[in-house]
Image: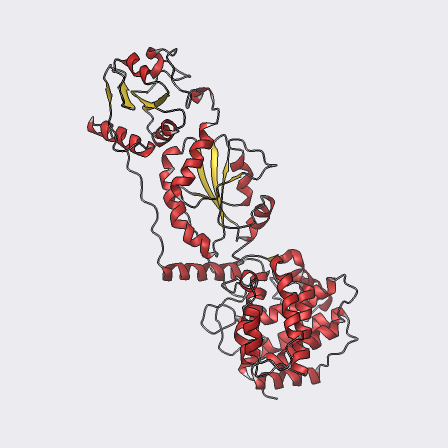
Length: 543
């Protein structure tokens, strides 16, 4: 019997092992004033005595990637607020962060939330829906202005009144003798937060203090004639004068103060530039390296993204090439789709779509594959379910390797194990599940020689309805390893060589001392691998 390379590709799937690759897709860095955190750090961060701005993002989501430069720009502008507000980001695409993102009810990305000091962990934070930096800053200004601070800063936002002593304006709460050399007075009308905004923009200048006034007559307490001017600077040696900002904004007021101080020889540190946004090609390469790192470095996982992408590729790319769906091919497709509907390999948004797909298949007498594919793609929910852009566990370091065949094989393994755990009364007999796979390959895997070779395997190792779950699961495993052995010396992806699976380091108990298989241990391992709580959502762009 001869075996074509196409079938080897189909049956090489996830049974792989490779050398480690180290790479990480990071959208943010400390130089951007964004602190990247992981799940174990979230509790500590939320307990901090400062306010927090946190972005929940998905590093493989195009919207999150597009938003990154904007968030960096915002974070850079918030650098001067650091004494009161820290900026963080957490990647909800990472396996280790998915649970905490779920706990904090992150249902979309990118998501920006504000957390006040010593945040109540029973709450989820205050969402800021705007994506415009200036609008986000306005929200933050309002939130911060309502806070009460420690003794050192208890008068931070409290307006300076006519009852306050002019002599004490340079004195902080914790010391009569301190480093404050200049005080800025900002007139803030009742309906405005311009004084608060000016104060926040100048927080990083340790020798400067900003006091808000709500009555221009207070300027007279410092030897300045009250007028329509709103901004004045005092120094502790008796020099007091009005400053003239270009426009009436907190940023303009702060810039005017900085310019005045620099004219007096005060050195003010320049803000470091944000990290350069990667080019599309650089970003693509980063994503590919991060995906390959995820697939290789992490303990072997089943990726939901692979199954979603594989099903989409079948419906969009493979199905249109089928000349006619009728008779046996219709029955095979209907059975396969019903199995998908029952075992839920798609994300939570896929139930309605699967019901619709089954209905369309039932009504598909006389339709070509292209006609059925177009019908499915025209559904409003199609793009919402099939939003995965890349394969993860089935990714390849070489073009035209792995991908769809790997995903199809992953799906077969997973559906067979999920059928084992099904509690429905109409659970498929394990042998019938294998027959569904066989018919799907027969009618929809577009390689005639591959189909012929697969049929030869079935003749040699028959599938029957009386098979137990153990027999059916091990049938797929044995077949897969048989083909991996036969194709071990064929060209393929060097990062994912074909080996006998599971390898000893993956499952030390799966072999005897003489290297023969302990099938009961293999069965346990395969069940663990494909159980629901081992299903990774890495690579799914919308949570």
